[in-house]
Length: 74
Image (cartoon, rainbow, N blue to C red; front, side, top):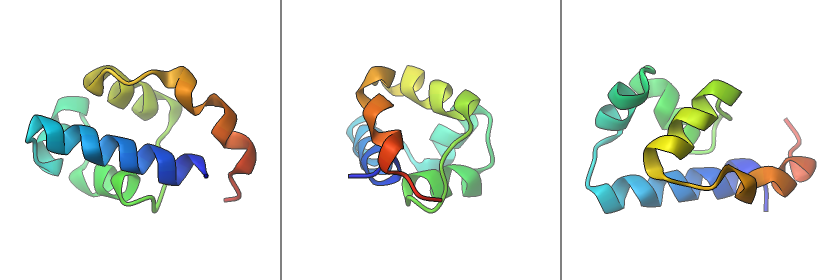
């Protein structure tokens, strides 16, 4: 599975568990809601800074995604 699909599924699930809207997440990590939506819908990948903001916000382990970049074809 690719980074985009795995990461988008994980952040979508984490957001729903917290019962936050996409706008609330975007506000918490200081990005435009459209940017966050693109990440959650696997349309785009976040910058490294955005990635770390999200994993820190949701308490995800960034190491879980390391091996997935090899399969990514942008």
